[in-house]
Length: 104
Image 1 (tube, one colour):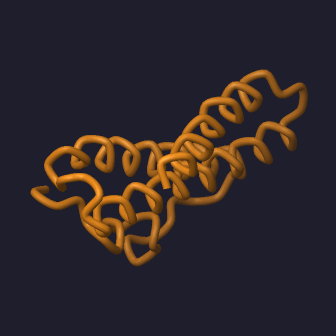
Image 2: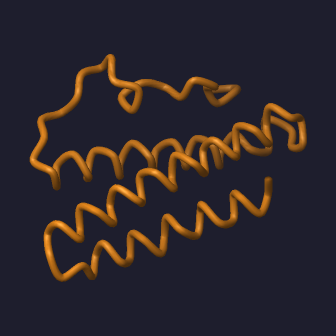
């Protein structure tokens, strides 16, 4: 699971960099979509690590919170880049994660 976190988390940075250097708007949007997917995958793996008891919840709380914030920021940026209006509060990315960060 640790390797999966490493892969998805580093993919966030690599694809964000690629998005920032994209020569066209469609390529920018495409790379930003990958950033959102990889950031959300990182949250998933962190939640699994926490839920499996491999790390104490208070030790992973900050990482989960920050990863969730990155997902939200990148999802909002992707919506803006696509020219879509803000999604409703009922949309999954507008809500807390299904496994909320403990202690929050």
